[in-house]
Image 1 (cartoon, rainbow, N blue to C red):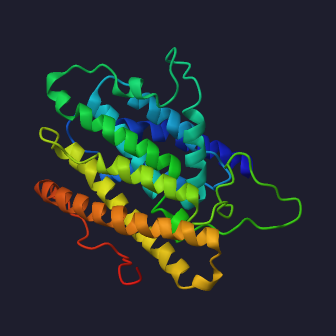
Image 2: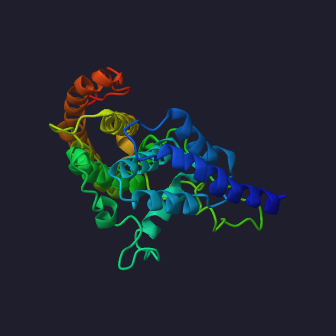
Length: 305
């Protein structure tokens, strides 16, 4: 059964996926259709986390990003963004690890470059009408690659919401090398120093995705909508984690207390106010394309602080 399932996985990540990928990244001005994104991301819910589906997916996405047309590049980056946000929880850690590994791997099709190389990604498309969003693509791609390598889903590494359960401790069971241990218990506590550094990186890269003059169009609006939703998700996740910590102050040692203070300062002085500004500025631009963001962040923390 397992060998038959693996053949099915390879089929899903080759023939059918290839067709949907082609439709999703067509070099035209129409945005990626929801049904295509849902079909692509849906594969991560159909296949067990013990199978590595992202090696094939990321290589295919990279080949699309390396094409000449900037519209295909942007749509490919957007699809990667959706895999990072909406992909199955069992594959979440595998996506982060596989993307990090590929970025260190030489691309045999493109001499002298590695997978997801920024120079190859930006390419040489000199079509005049595409130049308006060339700078945006550079900023957005940097954001998506940063986000996809640091956090999965709705930042549940911080909030701990819907995290997969630890693997069963049955005798003789070992962690699958194919899946990268995606279902294991998080190795880092939610409010660790590494997550703080990653959250700061994500915030900085996200804020840079503000649409400038000449960059507004349907495809860029679609991308910025997801960035804004990410910032709201990150803000809510940090609020959830801080509430959890602040409810039990007696269990926090001196070192942890200093780190929690850094998180509180980051949340109150940077993350929350910057997210509100970004969402307010972005919402007015999204209205023209029929895209809408929630009016409020789901969890806040101001009273506790």
